[in-house]
Picture 1: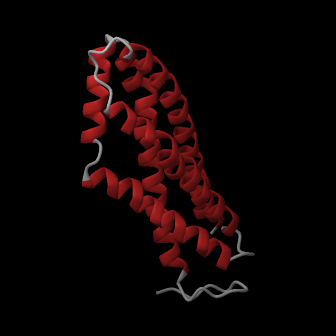
Picture 2: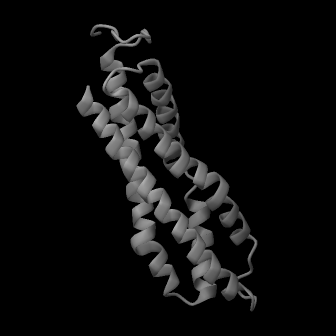
Picture 3: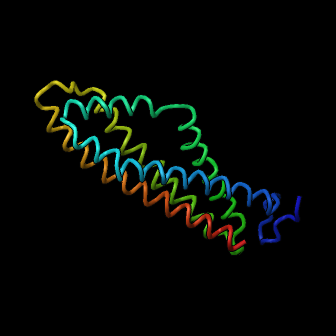
Length: 173
């Protein structure tokens, strides 16, 4: 392992280990940004073009199939890495990369994970209870599409911002 951090608070972790964590988190944030971007740019617009009962049924199916081990590891594994990087950034305060680690980690944690938990998951759970054949389903679907997609644009931007900030942390050394 390379030399330990020379910052005012020595974390006991090598710069190389922090670099590896940052690379992994950067890749995770970028992958998440791509998934969110795909939903904003063509999945949700494609569902919007369908008759409401079909769009609702399709999104209900997507919401079930999205909860896979691979996607959950990407989403929450990246969150764990970002949380660690926020702490490491605080412990390495004064080093050039510290502020980028903190801001990048927080952008993903707040803009992707927190927003998913407090905004998207409740809407997805509510949609799961909608009977697509009911008359009021079309009105609910129109509101769901609008609100969910706007929130997803925020997740896309936050994950993209996190990716850029973590790249800046790597470049800052």
